[in-house]
Length: 392
Image (tube, rainbow, N blue to C red; front, top):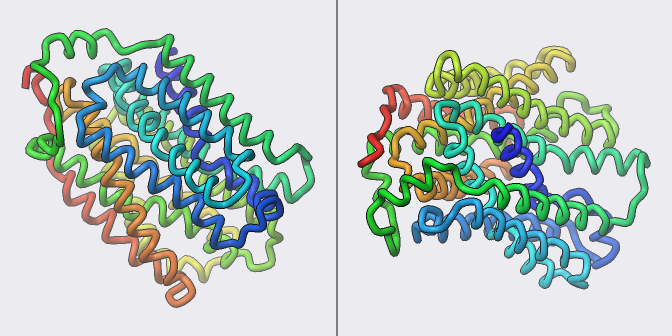
């Protein structure tokens, strides 16, 4: 039950991430925005998340503070900054609010991982798989809302969706505040030496953590760029599809990763997180390699292939964090996971900036530029990652 509670709280908290995506048309009309301006709103959240994760990770704050209180506080501040968005009245105030929201998400996503690790000892891969699966559904949701809106299936004031996300974030904070820190994590803090101050890159001296984090970095080179390309790949496979079909189809292709994550969590209980991560990297890498030739197949077969690729690209995501959690002592867990997220997210931004713009030039062959990520990740986790003794 605790695993499910944390996963639901993570879904509700990360609902703040993509709220403007569902009301793009309304924002354009209300503030007279151009398409490039809307990109700034999304980019501000990404930049805020990167700054927040680096700040929390490098300062050691993730391990000095109670994770449940940090999570709840981030949810409260994020809910407030998100709720103010319809009242911003213009572009630059909205960008500033989205930057703040992104920074608060650094206290929700990786700190939620730390909570899950603490409350699911012996089932870390399963718990994190549930958590990441919820995040995948949240990532896909704006495409569904956009498609439903274009189809005229509901008609609500555009601000209501944003305020609804803020209410969900407040509920997430309340759930985790009441849950608190895991007992063994509290005990570990009492046994630990004085908390570190200042910058902490020391976790990278741990060989197992370096390998697990490196595998995650390779995974992140592929994942978010693939998600960004999926609407383009879908439109290329089904050129006669309507905008509504493309939006709902993009939702389905990304959302399939949620059940994929849960399946990976179940599988990790039988073969271990490292083998699930290796299967995901090998599978998605193979998809990168052969995709240019798959486009010659009928549209239905291509869509099935894209769904499989999307699921394989994210099935391993939770298990790099599970491997990192095994490699570091509990009293440094928050720092380790937050730094891993920060650097991995920075790599995903670099991949997006470099690879998405070359789609018009390379089209289907851009898949080969995603391939180095899975290959590097697979090479880095080829050796077993052993547990770190608690007293280390």
